Image 1: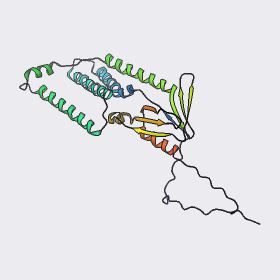
Image 2 (image 1 turned 90 degrees about the horizontal axis):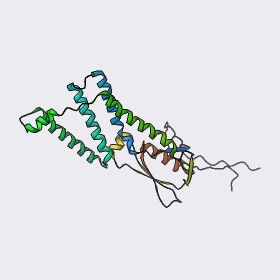
Image 3 (image 1 turned 90 degrees about the vertical axis):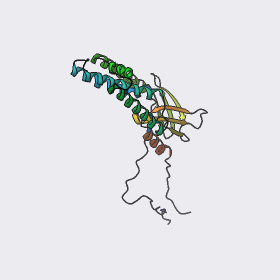
Image 4 (image 1 turned 60 degrees about the vertical axis):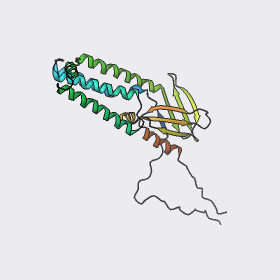
Length: 246
């Protein structure tokens, strides 16, 4: 009477005591955000400035002028991040160098009236003033926009499973399906500033049966999303059946 055949065990290459790799997720949700989300430093700066103005109660004090100038500096840098791309770390370093050079030059003229007296007088006269209501209004307006963005992305997002790429969009939950087993994924980080602010980047999805690529801009936590996609799409399941020898 024949006996069942059990194949020999394949030795594991995993180091002794190492934890097993986490299983791939069943589904991954990808959301493309608008660029306005990168203005959150301005919102926080406005909120802090508003609280300070409430405590100070006098917008004409020297320290309140400094608070207003700091808010304007944060806003200016945030707008530059919003408007331009900094694809390399060297460009980011150059930007900070130029900003520090300009700030140092302005402070030099501000506290030394013997150097360019006209510019010194202009800087002495520059005293930006805003009350708490203004700053609360800026923070509230940006907060409302961010809330609207969070609501909107609930009706427009992508879902990746081991077999399908699904696009959920519209208030009636419209659904588009694409084949996922042969899905190719590219990751691009085109702006180091944006990556620093929200760890964001661009994902380019290439479904096998689609002539055009699907581009998702400003995907948050881009490296984590890429790692999850790699685990899901790169996992091979091998089943070994036991039976009588041939």
